Length: 222
Image 1 (cartoon, rainbow, N blue to C red):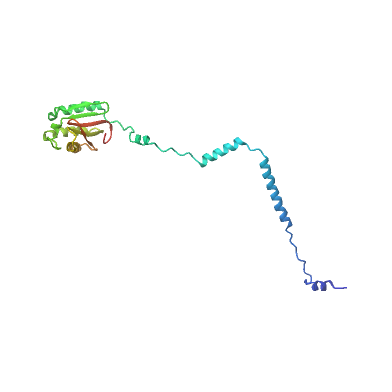
Image 2: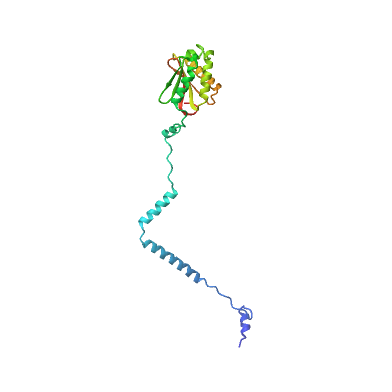
């Protein structure tokens, strides 16, 4: 009888060696198939189940609002213009100021022809042009300087907006230049007399007139 160990050596194996282990992978393929079947089954169930339309619409609307927030409308031209028209803080009462400047002008015989005009939205200190300025010149007349200084002292005590408007007879460029120079000169005299805020100078066409315009609200220019 042949020795089994000799037969094993002859077949290429080693004496007392363990037979090789065979690895089977067929179960892994079977598991993958089962997973695929389960996924297919659940997809089929979802496809066959009825979709709640109202709930789906609510969810879709909520997502749409979250992902696409509404944009604020750009301000229109009118809205932009109205920004500069916001109501300003009120200044001193115009009726009180009318009484105050009437008293100031009564003490200024150089401006005896001056007038205080109270309008709905402003107070005008109307000064005689021939008494305030040197004829044909933007320079202040020497006799009027004391009265202008008194007006400046009174204006320095209020915080209403102030402007100086000068109009000259005629519409020529030279007349407008002289009117503007006079308005600027009177505005500078008021600043030098104690008014600590900008005073707007305006030249206009019309009858010769010099107006100090006081607005009802606070600010630097009407």
